[in-house]
Every structure is written in C-alpha cells, then in structure tokens.
Image (tube, rainbow over all chains, first blue to last red; front, top):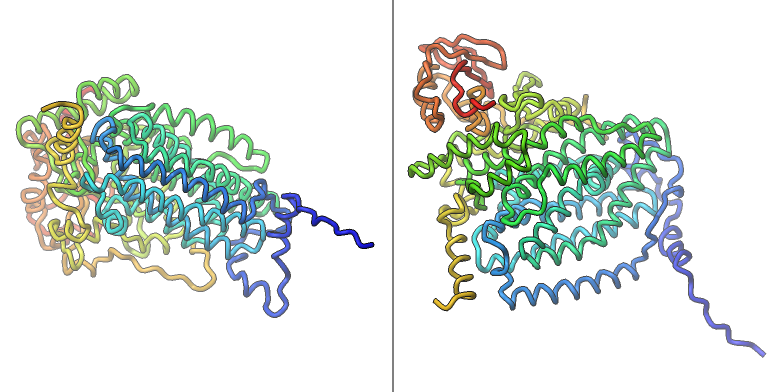
Length: 506
Length: 118
C-alpha cells in the first residue's frame, strides 16, 4: 500500500539556497562579459563569487511579510499624528528647519540610493550580492516614501516643505547631497558599493540617523521617530552588506587593497562633508538638544570608527586619509555652517536665527576651546546689527568647492582664523577647493569633476544672469515665507498662535 | 589620473568663461575677517578697473564688518592665486592679469576686531 508522505517543509537555509544561489547559472547563449559589462573595468579582481557570505539569508517572501507589517504600524502612527495635531506637539517651530533640510536633501538621497542599489544588483555578477542589493534597493525606496509621507503632515501648516522636489534639483545647498550620490552612481558598481554601502551606510550613517531620530524624540516629533524606527531594522542589514562587500573585495585578491584604500579615503571625506550639516542641526537647530556634534563624533566617529579601522587593519587597511583633519574640524564646523546659513538665509527654504544667550551658554560649555574665542564675537556682532534694524545679509554669495560643492566656509586645519584656500589648474582653467582632500579627489579624476554643476557659478550664466528674484522663482522659493530669519517668520507666528489656541482660553 | 572608464571619457567644464556673455568670475576675500562666511563670488567685466572693483563691489560687500571704515585701501596687501600681488588701480582686471575664476585676497594687518580674542 502506498503511504502518503507529508511534504517536508524546507528549512530556511535550504529555502534560501533554492531562492537565491540556484537562480544563478553559467550562461551559454551569451558570454558572461556581455551580460555583466561593468564587472571588471574598475580593476577589482574577484575569483570566486560563491565565497560571498549572506549573513541575513532573507528570502523575498519573508522580506515582504516583515516590511508589510512595518508599513501597517507606520501608517497607523502617521494617521494618529495627523488626527491629534502632532505638528503642535513639537518643542518649537525652530525645530522644523532640521526637518526641511532633511526632506530637501536627505530623502531624495534615499531615492538616489534606491536607484544605485538597483543598478549594483544588476551589474555585480554574484548571486548573493544581487539579492542583497535588490532588497536594499527596495528598502531605500520605502525609506524615501515613508519620509515624504511622514513630513507631508507638516506641509499642511508650515512653509518650506512645499517644493522639496524642485529644491532637490535646483536650490544651492541640496547640490551637496545630490552631487554626492551622483558621484557614486556614475562610478562603477564596486566603487558604488564602497561609497554608499560601506562608507555611508556603515562608517557614517550613525552620525546622521541616531542624532536625527533622537533629536526628533527629544523634540516631540512622533512622525519622524516613527519613520526612524521603521527604517532601523533595515539599516542593520545595510550595514552588514557594506561590511561584507569590503571584506569580500579584500579577501578575493591582494591587488584590490590599493583601490579599496583610495575609495575609502575618497568616500570618507565626501561623506564627512555631506554630513557636516548635521552638526548644525545638533548644535543649533534643535530647540531641545540631545548631545553636541562633538559628543556624537566621540561616540560614532572616534569609538565606533576607530574600532572598525582597527578591525580592518589585518587586511592592510589604514584609517581614511582625512581622519585627522576631520577631527580638527569637529569643534568648528557647526558654527561655521550656521554663520553661513544665517547670512545667506534669504536663499534658503528654511529659517535660521541668531542663537539666544542661553543657546550661546550651552555652545560655550560644549565647545570650551573654540566658541567664545572664535564664534561668539561674530554672533554678538550680528545680533548688534539685527537690533539696530540692519540685519546682515551677505549678498556677496559664496565660493563653492568644485568637489563637495559646499560653500568654502572652512578654515585651515591648524588655523581657525584663516579660510582654507586651495586651487589648481586643469587644462588652463582654475578650480577651487575647500580642503586638501577635496583637491586630491579632483586630481584623481579631473575629467569627472570639471563637469560639476555648481549652483553659484551657474546663477551668473544664461538664463538667470545673476537675477536673484528670477532664481527664487526657478527654485520655487517663496520670498518672505520660506526664507529668512526665524524671528518674525510666519512659521514662528503661526506656531505660537495655534499652540496658544490649544493650551489657553484666549 | 584619467577617469577609469570603458570608453574614452572627456568632460567639459560647466563654468568656462564662454558661458558668461563677456563677463568673468572673480572670487574675493578679506583674510582673517570671517564675519563673511566664505569668499565672495563676483561676476565682472574684464574691462572694469581694479579701482572700480574696490569702490563699487568690495567696499559695499564688507560694510557690515566693524573694521570696514578703517581700511586704507591703498595700503592693503593683496594676493592673487595665494601669491603677493600689486594691482594697478587704474588698469582693468584683464590688464592686472586677473583671469576667469581667479581668487584675490587682501590683508589688513592690525585690523582684527572680531578676532581680537583669538
């Protein structure tokens, strides 16, 4: 008699094997090189793709299940936030500037990462890599979407949120983040993985997301906390992918070391410059501050980064070239950025302000060796000008770095009283840089960076020809609403009025 | 180094002088006067004299600094491409050798109100 045998359920590991590795095969109708044309030209040598470790072993069906669950929770909280006037529970409307910068510059970066990982998943021949990149591509798209949805609640009440997509493409300060991702996406797939997967997601991401999400929690912004939590479980997978990728490259062939080290040097510095604006958020923009930028750097840079590079030393990797100069900049950068943002605030789709006495006392305590000595005199002078009814607007506009595209607000690593002037010539034309490291990156690939679209120089070309009013229209900046000093802004007045209605009887 | 690429790779500068309708860019900054967060970017005619640049553009831009009124513009020390430089005030930018995207700097030793603590 035939016995009916119950079909055995596959264990997860085996199921994963079927769903991933066994989908890869040696092609016969077409040559492998034609199917993966970008796999070798960068110079990274891979001998055996099957050595790629997949620590998470996540299959697509499990992936959909987890993500769908997270989405349900996320949207339930976002609905509750909208219905309970969550926008009035934040500590102060000054907090919104941090959110506006995030929406204009960072959320589009999530979408750029989505495109980049989709491409890396197609171009890298290894099956394990393809699956991991595909999932990360989906994560990044979800992050962009949940962030935009979460912040759309604020757009109903406050200025500066309404045109983030135009501003992602056109306003001057977002070109910093955009050029960062464009640089990575126009590189080969291995460099992309090192740039975004390792350098950004592994080395630097904690400096962005942890302070940002803690900042949201400290300042009563449940919407942002929620998208942070929803993204957090993905980040562990992304960090693992980044680390696995660099170890794989280093283990496959000793010749890969020089290239990997050069990319680490480059992408550490590019990432450090992009994340510089986070310092301003932490030290100036959060009404209720979590920790200073210096304190965050100690934890996430010095301790975590230091441990990572000690771990990688066994492959011959040394800490990134710009590490010491980064350390020297930590006590200065947030002040240098905020002074810039304040004097160019007529051109920003968020508000800035002069720190109060209480703020300055905090800054002085957190930056005992630099704030009172270098930056307080400037803020005091700016306050004097504002109180005299002649607030300072710097109509001179800024010199931008050809590589990182930030205004050249930085000083010499060893002289905080002196701007860092670096310039070079390529084919007879002059190019300017904010630092030695940005100049090195340019010199390694000048043909790439001479094409940079720099917002300030392009303002003086056709069709704008220096017309700032026309420029505001072009970047969808509503003059007198989105820009300028927080003091006297509609955001300030409305927040006080509405909160007053909610908490008082008159 | 050339860009690593599969095919010959040639880039074109976006900010070459032809794109400025006969004008040119000049960067200018006052050493140790960091109330101005970054060097200024200016779009100027190469026929403008150096004196006009100082009178019409630089003086108004630096008004907000407490040292501005005390500057003796004939006595300041100038640098061009980070090298000492003696401009002729009555000659044009072109005659003074100030090329497109050139950075000029000036120094006023002793004048340093907002850095005095440093």
